[in-house]
Image: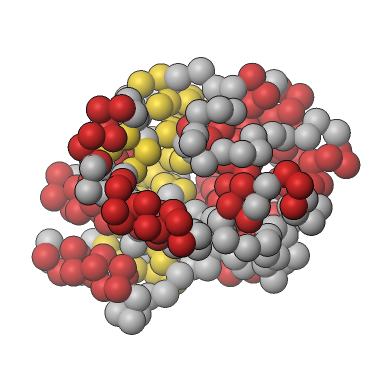
Length: 337
């Protein structure tokens, strides 16, 4: 299998080792790597660029700017990539790896320029828009869409949970996914509400991803595109623990989680390093892990999704509203909406 692998959030803790593994073990692929800031002023982008230089990957990897907090920018980026592939400048897509994410655990919710809650837009809506717009740019052999979730999709699984993730079943309730009510101080602090928004975005990704699987399977022209939705594990060394998090979590991460990560891995069956998760991500993206399979996985083991995400009526409601929120019409995608 060859082609172009698109990775969002490509300078992240998991993504950099994934890129390195792809370059060293799967050199036939072309990599399109998106980040918010392409300059070396961003130390993480600088680290990503160092990996490309080490593997002399200038001809087969490029770093591109993409801010998922702007649906206009997502649309323009997808259109440009579609043109490059159509003109033969880039090989057809082999995988879209929706790795980028956002959370804010230290303040009230934020709205993007599109007027949507930022965690939901960056984690779900922008990726949904990107995927739907680019389905027609996969090669004749198909490929993969890789979506990321976590144990927060299941109530009671994550220690940061105070308010469980949920997906409202009514049309009016669904609107709260992108236009939430003000935080209720009686229900918890900024950490509690922020983590709930993050967890809810991940549950929404899973629900939408299962709807995508159903629709791709029914389309004879697109049925060879598989959707791999997975929990890559609890990453003890992830930089996310230090970003937009309250001081107490930063201290806990620096003084306890990272130094004692080997102990925590004995206590948590899905705890591991970003490097290990990155290698698995690379193998999934290259279709070397579970080739041709689709569905929900924890680490690389098939798992059962929470009941709410398996309900087809809920899937259809999330699917329809996501397309509306993202501004996707039938003209924008090769898949029947």
